[in-house]
Image 1 (spheres, one colour):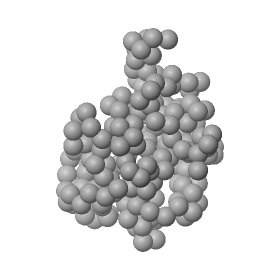
Image 2 (cartoon, rainbow, N blue to C red):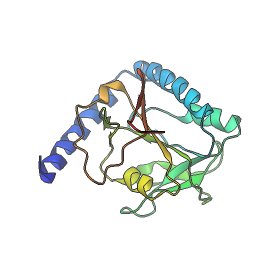
Image 3 (tube, helix red, strand yellow):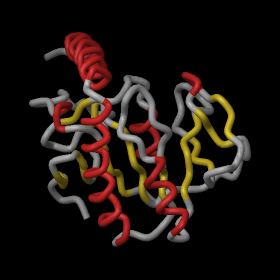
Image 4 (cartoon, rainbow, N blue to C red):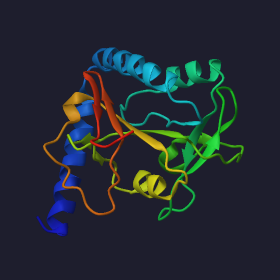
Length: 193
């Protein structure tokens, strides 16, 4: 499939999968979210370091209870901020209760600009495939960020099993996740630590 065809297919799949996710009953998403959170707690207990999280958007898995748990355990968490629409995300340290401001798409971001480098990045999924490639919203932010972080962060994609695709038709700029966590379990990319 040529690049124009892939881009068109991805646009269509994004729309379909976001609409699907948003029509799922909230109680079902919460139940799935509880299973995802339990799996993430186990995974994160084994991996120290600053945790890059995200603010939930458009019926994504809600990591806010996980953030509370991580902070209570003494872990630093950080939220991503769009600084340059063609550049990587900037991660800013944040604790629940600290001031937030509206960022791109009105997603809350920390007001205080305490930049940190996450050791682990949680990335929301619009779609994903068995190769642990992530279909996002199309801005390329997470791909650029993961490619730019040094040392490279351990990348965990988070979504629901209904978002599984046969392939996302990965391109040279797509960075695979090390793990994908859904309500049914954990997928590990071949060769991932």
